Amino acid sequence: MEDIKKTFEKVVESGKDLAEDIKLKENFEKAKDVTLDAVDKVVTKFEELKNDEELKAKIKEKAEDVIESSKKLIDDIKENENVQKVVESVKEGAKTVSDKTVEFFEKPEVQEKIEDVKDKTLDIAEKGVSKLREWLKPNEKDEEE
Image (cartoon, rainbow, N blue to C red; front, top):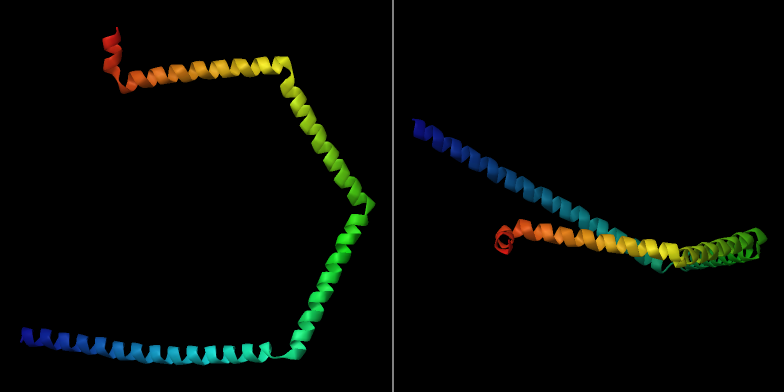
């Protein structure tokens, strides 16, 4: 009796799977149909827009307006004295900073400090390499002593 019950449960489960598969296929087909319909509508609308001369003229007119406005704005900025003063001030400031930086690094005491730092950096690096060598190959140190 138990075997019959298990077999019946398997048949019911298979039937559910089959029903779900059929439902899934139906839903897939519906989704496919709706998608294809939407694509057709979009393509049709694009074709209509592509061939709409009035729309093309409006777009061209608006583009020309934007170009003219942009040119006018650029000309206004170029002619604005305050903007020019700011630009010149920034240029002068940048040149001053650059000149002072070069001047600072060319001072003998600064060059001397740079050389000291280089020497100390080399000393630290050499000590670090030595310690690393001792750590990686401790037997070599024993052999040297």
